[in-house]
Image (cartoon, rainbow, N blue to C red; front, side):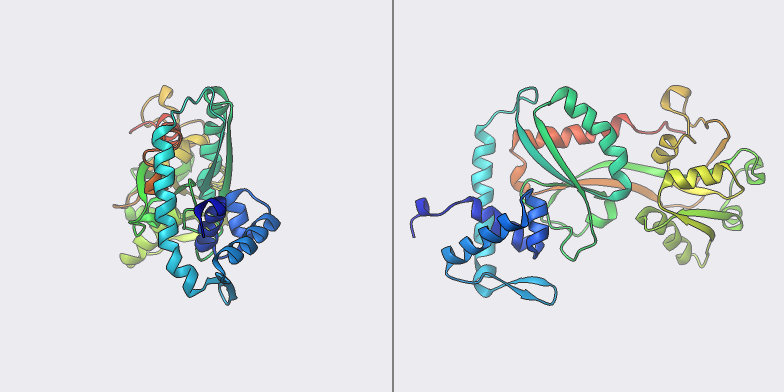
Length: 316
């Protein structure tokens, strides 16, 4: 079959199906309807003369023919996109392009409230589609020019992706000023003796419990809440304490801004360093290596990193 008879857009759909193993998830990643992806799959099957993907227990499973073709298609798309990216200059002020982000839920509100106004000012023609990780088996697969923004330790095994660390900072313990624990420096023994409010399902705070367990220790968690902002407010109205990244303590109003001075607390709150070694809150950007030379993709990565840098908490 001649190349001129093949719609290369179908290969992009193939890559998404190979990564997501689901028509609906592939459609979500590509910004298409499910019917459009289903139609593309029918065309792919006709082009290859093979079913390519069949339904299995864990979703769509590639046939031997699809598995054999996957690396070749990936490499071909990399070469095409690298060639186009090198040839095309990028001016954010005039560019019209769509980008996709997949963001951990606990960081999306922090990033998007700063990134989206920045894009409106600097790149008004840019469209951004942001979705959360869902916990699906192939959730961490990066499709096309998608950028992943996720907790650092989640990404250590993804050696086939490029990575940029954009946040690396310590946790603090937030309590109200009238909490008796605020009268003296907080030790590990003192921290364990307190009652805690924890953000449920958040990897960062689970990391604290894991570190304590390795020491044979356990904190008493009274409440589990959805967000760090909730935890901060509860700590400000009770004798419970909340451990959170310094960035979110500042955003929640517990830690003073950089303009107020390094390490300053705010209002009714008292801030202590977390008395536990090795607990670092890290956020990474991940992307397909083939987009390194893509000027627009590189600009967006730098823009995301800059939003994290300019919203960093004051140092103590």
